Length: 394
Image (cartoon, rainbow, N blue to C red):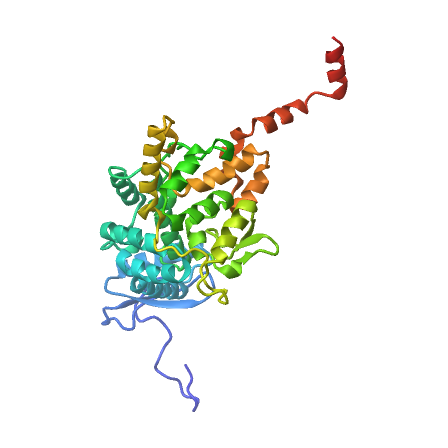
């Protein structure tokens, strides 16, 4: 090789040790062999092999075979992707939390957004007792199955399904936040629920049961019961009702926030209007629209209503009446009474759904059997007028 002054250098580009193309070592005394090859992307790569020409030849053959098999393979890009995966795995590992830690964060959101957060909080605490020490992403469908099966020993299937729905909602939120890849509750089926009785009071012309319950209640609770039966309002909706929600001019009660998060208006019939007018005359702050309509000291109807139903049953038995219809009757059954009486009066199910604030028509379909006249009229539509005339002649 020529130098700048024109003389010939003693340095040579020839290999110091004879070997195939792509394989060399710096000097005969150097124990380290090196290989050189071009990847599928056209990049030139060099690697050192510990010792032994045979090992270097094997490594070179492997690299050439990989290039021939995968034309897009590049060891530099492969190392870069491996580093990125390692960083991602490390980040995910740092984000891993226990079920208890996630439940504490979930309860903060529940208290701010769910109206029934107290019942949710109680169930979340029960879930923490079972899954608390487990990592959130380690909860499996089998773990969920065992937990729900354990609940069935002391709770009804409907209650177990409520626990399942809550756990599914919790883990769906975790999935949205990137803490889970798959929700383990999705693979767990709901427990079959027996179809319960739909308890309701008979129409007013046969309302011995209703009269007995009203008489068994305290005087200050009777208006609450009357409005419940004639409007279908939920207990929580009645307790939250304020005088600004009652419009005597239009004859409507506005439910600002129902169970499904929507507002609705319920028309007042003459009984409700008269009852509310009496309560309006007893207002302590007539100029305050935020005053509650019902001055109720009970947080739940279960604190007083079951005892009143028992007293009503005793009165009916002494009078020789059938008291079995009141067995299991709760305050929520007043909604069933409201819907049943509307259906028996010929009101269509869609209207009943709107008045009662049911989100799904399926919830109202249970009352459809109470309207036999409506069903008979529907079947009668199959008969044409000509057919009716012909049958009459015969």
